[in-house]
Amino acid sequence: MKSGAYVAILACTALLLATAQDYGNSGARSNILALEYAWDQAQERGDTKALSALFDNSLIFVDYDGKVLTKAEYLARVKSDLTHTEQVVTETMDVHVLGNTAIVVGVYRVKGIENGKPYARRRRFSDTWMLLGGNWTCIAAEATPILH
Image (cartoon, rainbow, N blue to C red; front, side):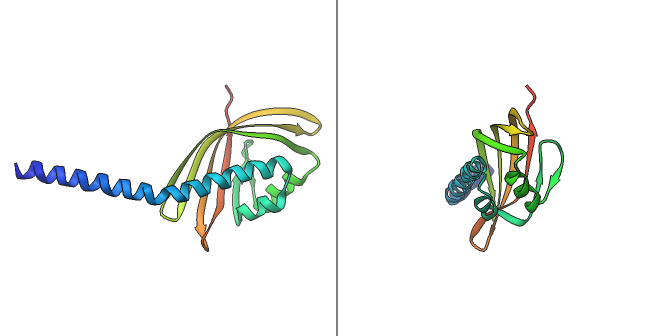
């Protein structure tokens, strides 16, 4: 009987700790979701200054075609006359907070013009954010095409 009570107490304690951690992370989740939406809006406007503020200087971005871009290369592509993003719509996002690091996994659709031709793509993404100097900053990101 004692072992059953012990297991029940451990289970309740674990549940309370998980709930407390989730409550503590809800503010971080809200902030990161807001930053993700700000990224979408800045991308649509071609606002490289706003995008630059979201990214760490050592950003690593793995693009849908497998190319690895630095922060400067990513911002140059956004600013380029060859690519113009017209619309970014996020379908799903899930934020996982682990201490001072958070990973966002989601799906988005993007429309625009690239090399003079219209495009529409759907991608799954994962973005890694880190709390640096009191601010959440994106340190790594990747986008994978969804082909169906």
